Image (cartoon, rainbow, N blue to C red; front, side, top):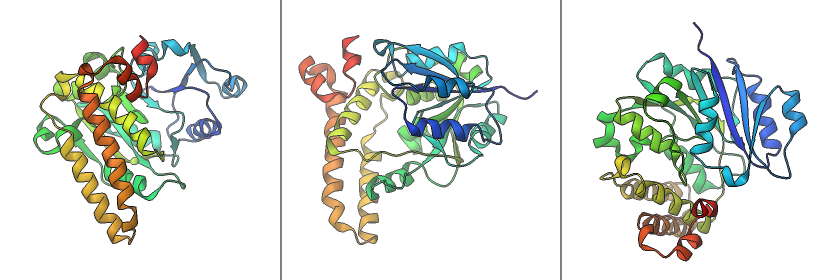
Amino acid sequence: MTEKIEVIIPVYKPDREFEKLIFRLKKQTRLPDRIHVINTVSDRFPAKFCEEQGIHVTHIEKADFDHGGTRDMGMRQSDADIVVFMTQDAVPADPFLIEHLTAPFEREDVGAAYARQLPRKDCHIIERYTRSFNYPEKSRLKGKADIPVLGIKTFFCSDVCAAYSKKAYEETGGFEKKTIFNEDMILAGHMVEKGYMIAYAADAQVIHSHNYTGLQQFHRNFDLAVSQAEHPEVFAGIASESEGIRLVKSTARYLLREKKGWLIPKLVWHSGCKYLGYRLGRSYRKLPLWLVRKCTMSQSYWEK
């Protein structure tokens, strides 16, 4: 029996990238059986476009959005065997995304699979290299036996474009209902603990990147660290710093090879912002609430 596949996309003020995403989903070699858009209510939503494309839409209030809880709501509403989560700015690179992303589920022990993220044309060189570092050309499976070697990378998974087995999702409790960020890695950690494998499908590709400033990197890494501090059952005893240091050193060598050593101060600045944000986030419970609000990029999380 052919497995049923659903794509769920949380959106907020979607733009032309979202429309391009939908058009390319409609041209996949393996068409999703349903596309479900969860729209956070705003003054901008392409209702007519979604209706014309046959998209199922659920509207929620801004105060009700949660990175984990909203996706869990979509998953609980789905009767698909495999559910693909995407963000509104991740565009399929070719017509084979769904086919390649769901192929790993031929193995019953695969709980989740995530796609390779390719940089946009306007992506800066440091972020372009970071993409190639985090999303290499070769696919691989990751499980509990890989933790001594891969460390925290064992749990790496990204809901920018990731697929989940509904069966494995339900067995492992699903996404956290309230989380500031990082719902994908938290769930991947629970799946690995239960004996499931996480598949990196390098031939499933989306175009997605951001040119973050140093301050934006600080906020993002603060929230990332908060999520780790709140889930010691996944992240306790597994250091993230070593992987970050490896990325910085590798990026510096790459810039020197490309004769762009003048960008190393920018690399140091961005890396310092990431590290400071991470260290403060790990210790957020010791910080006054006013300072936490200055550090976070998710103000609404601290209001709930």
